[in-house]
Length: 117
Length: 115
Picture 1 (tube, rainbow over the protein chains, first blue to last red):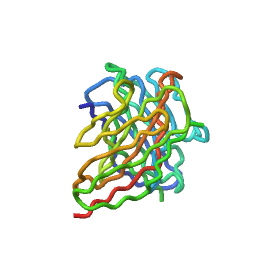
Picture 2 (cartoon, each protein chain N blue to C red):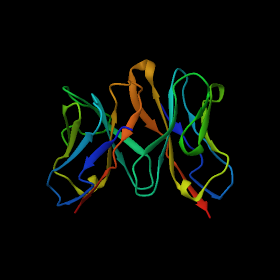
Picture 3 (tube, rainbow over the protein chains, first blue to last red):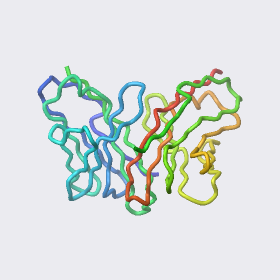
Picture 4 (cartoon, helix red, strand yellow):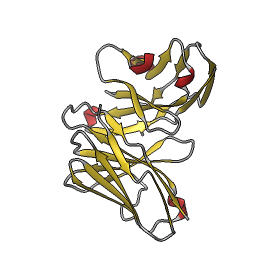
């Protein structure tokens, strides 16, 4: 089946620094990837839709200058949390939609736990 | 606004009991419906999905779900649960005809199976 990886799996950083999270589709091409945020014991909240070769589409209330998304290839999207603060601590999850089947099924990565001190 | 409701926040069952988890969505029109499972410490995995056709959908691990359009529901069922089914279950919806592939998730249901 389709596999999506994320790196790193967890990261601890100081307040004010930037953190980059990678999302890769390992065995399929994905023009479209999605970035979610999951708070403890809560559901996934979509942050943005990442499109290869174009600008990401951000959900209402998500600061595009704070959460920079780059989808440079058909298998890689990155999320950079700029000038991170403790309130940015969360579990960030990406998903990818397989181009070939166009079945609108998203395959999820294992997530990245971010802790900002 | 699009919303997905999962009314059961935490369900506790004994092994071999039957399971039904509720999922309702808020609007008409064509929808795609999904159930995802998140085992402890693992990532979200697709259990089953409904796009069209037979409203009774069978997924992996013995799960099934029934789409009832008139009730705006897509409840998840399993006739006999196992301890290994302990996990968080999420219902999700998107709207293909609006070019909207964004998934909206329910709040999730935590399922605990007692051996």
